[in-house]
Length: 442
Image 1: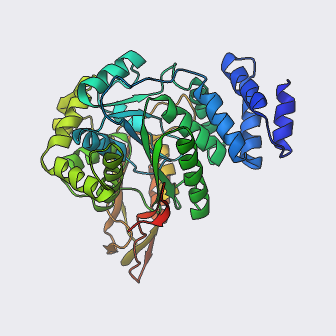
Image 2: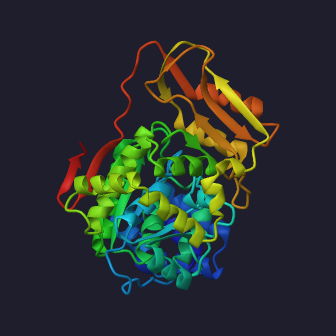
Image 3: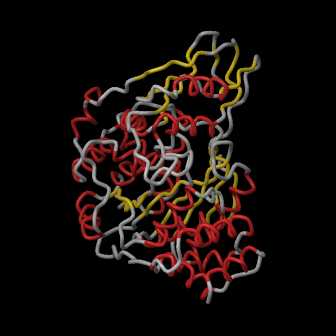
């Protein structure tokens, strides 16, 4: 087989065989197929797509490019959650300790920031000393000791995805249902889980902006998981404004810790409780999602979830004193308020723009090897539906960069649309897909 012929075949919209997909992916891992040919292949898939059979083959090849972890010696139903990526989506940091406190083991292998969205690993690594690069042996040891673990991909787990994931980010091929599906499911199937809850975002800050595309992705992910013998529930959720108020790595850790200590951030905790309820039910510690939500609230208010997070931080090498006393953290050079020029109500927020500005401030990457400034980011002061007066802050942004202040201020101001009429805030949880079918979430 010739790489160029496979690229041409997909470029022309023809279906690839499992052998062709396997040849291309494995050749890329071995180095016989260079970055520029994989980039061309990814772009061909981006434009021409893959059918469900091709997507399943790609998932399987990426899954078997490395080790599949066996957690069968750890008691309980192992459950994980995956989000397709959003702005301000720090839910994993709150969710994993909640679910583990409810007695459900949570083995979580996460990714880094992708495009305009943040990554769980970058957030965790903003905690001084926190190690996400554990070996498989250590990964199994941590989850058996404390009931949860949060790491990045090791060399053993889906190495094909790790290499392709980094390339997708810098070649504008992120928003592809086959590529997203294979990336997510190859990692999740490799990490030793029994069940998975999916949070598929839709809206102006999501990779799948249109609901129809998000629905197609949710169905694809759900069906792949089911076909590989896993229990799966998928939710389609709104990303027409950032989740919570904080956008940026350390800022999101602070907000997560506040939530774990019982501080209510309405949209953030509504979604956290919904996903936690589903995970607790799949983990067989609740009879229904609603019962799972009650358990999740109980472990927040009892302080158990916060204690579990402290346990996780300490066990993975993090300095717990920064969690307990966040004022110890270094301050950014600049703290700039963005003030409204009108009276009215926040009618809409350009969430993609919020994410892109946070990257510009230093909170994300434009190149694979870019360094992230954990202090950089944005804290919203107003959300959709909030009343605002002229001169009142809409957001505050933080950065060490002198040369981005003027542009960041202008772009953030334009990201908020102020109208005289009060809008109805978007519904946060839209749809659920499970074995019983598709239903509107109420």
